[in-house]
Length: 323
Image (cartoon, rainbow, N blue to C red; front, side, top):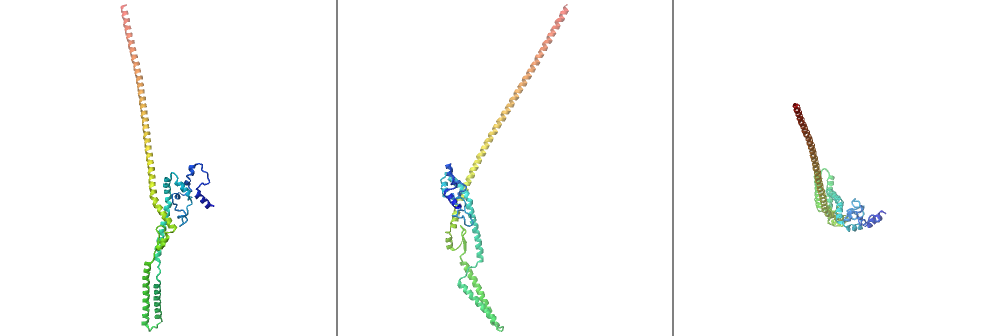
């Protein structure tokens, strides 16, 4: 049942049973989170056709749909989306290559250790000759041991011959072993896929394996995308930096404008305060002038009164004198 559902998703896309009211959304089904974006741009490393299910890599569980790929290619924003999907797929490619490189390092260490312990087989003729020399040495030892003690010289001769044969056999074996090591075909590791092989024939044969071709494509894909993604990220950072600079300039302009408005408001307030002080001074001066005028009027009135009183007294005095 699950396989059938996955097959229908791959053929018809996600939400195949839902009726799309918005035609624009119907053309963007490839944006569904369940659709593999790495597949849309050409290569998902965990696709079963590549590494999925091999070497302990779990297969990709997202939808790999050719219909979604065609829909994505026809989208007006395909170029920008491609750059974004490439950046998203890069970690999966790097993970696959990193795991392979670790396998290559492990295999090289194993071969180095095995080669140090392993002794390559010797030619059959050399093996026969060594066996014969060892038998002859053993025979002479037995003959020497069977002789009576009074045949001391004969016994010493046989023992010396047996020892010489043993030394010759040992020297021959060491020499032939060195030749065999030099002539042996070493085990090697493929630097692309991590497969071990021996000899040029095995090397040529393993290059036809799916795992080798998969890793070759993945490595080529990574080498192609890495500079593109780096360039795209730099561009994105530049655009963000430009937006930040523009926002900073806008905020500076707004702050300068606000500062100017506040300064203008403070200037107007000072003018109003100065105007109020002048009016108060004017009013005070007006009230002072009025008081001065009142005092002047009263002084003049008092003077006129004293003058009248003086004239009246003199006139009354003259009239009394006349009588």
